[in-house]
Length: 155
Image 1 (cartoon, rainbow, N blue to C red):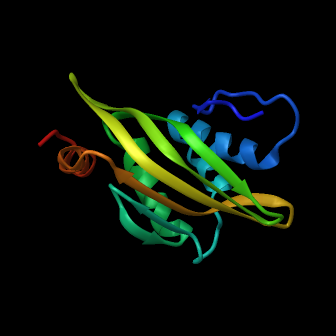
Image 2: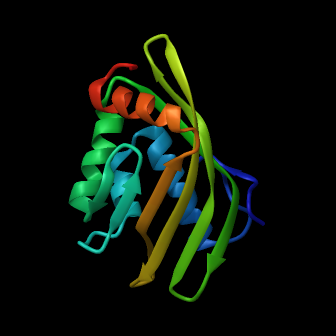
Image 3: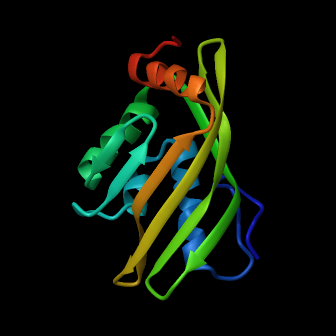
């Protein structure tokens, strides 16, 4: 059974390696764990990410820079995944849903609402994230979020 909300703190009853890998992503993100994040992603030039902060990135080396900026920056960022569906075949799965959370910088906070999809591929018995796409729901919040992450201050 799938949890309604994924935060990275879930413990599944029964094995579901695909869902476990998705939970690991949110654990890595919310704990700022670059090692776990690296383990979650495909380590090749085929990996790609399109998100509000980093734009389009191709390869783990480019994607890692986006997470490093978030993890090592002055802000606290938290997201959880909800209202999602998981679609799986033998060697791929896709999840489509929404993230909600916050971005805190000093005494200011921006609530986040992001439409998010992730694609994972299985190789050598391991699920690895191949693609991520995220879009912020409220256009006005996009500029504020980008400026805060990239410049370390709210616009």
